[in-house]
Length: 324
Image: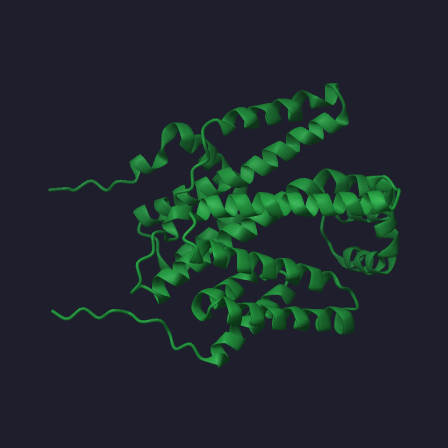
């Protein structure tokens, strides 16, 4: 019996360029921008560090052109720089054979710490408080906020009135940013890292199956939060519920702890949910549709499943019994 060994795809320069263009398009698309690092990481893995880095630089130049001449705002350029950094880092984790979870946690926390230090130094250099600095940035973006207000005024959403009132008060908006930004930034960083690493590991296994790799995407699906972190979560819950008695900042810290730990429990719960779908035999497009709906509409339930998996070990129930 002849066994056919899969070989890597033809590595043409056209496909390399397509990967770079895809990263820029994904970055511009906003909704799909979370997947923008994937083509860059794949380019480095398939074509090598030099070619992958060069195509990333080309994407950086293209993003700068779009940001400066089309959007007249360098936000896109800054975001693509982060995308390039994420893609290169994910590729290095894979190429060096580092455990994916260990690599993601170390890089993610390091990136967050680096950005936090940079923001702190930037704010201190202006001799303004954090709230005053944010208000200043909001006032500089008054034209864009006015455009958003017009769009919100035409919408029929229930919360549109509250959003409009918030946009009319830069001081309140600044406080909302100070309360929400740390947790959303933390969550965004690790969501982007996890999903792109998952795609890279799966693609590497499919495209380079002839090689022996120690890790696959199953490593991420078997993600498990150490049980000791439950104590930190409990502390966050206590602060969120009773922290107001000691000051508003304590309550906000509690909510931030819950949200930041919640993303890790979400990853654990997502692995359990994926195994449940496999146990039920749900595959193909219908499986993808269910996953997308659950992620957007019931992500808190996935995180709760990940939390309680520490006690109940749900996977032990996903075993099909042989009926004789």
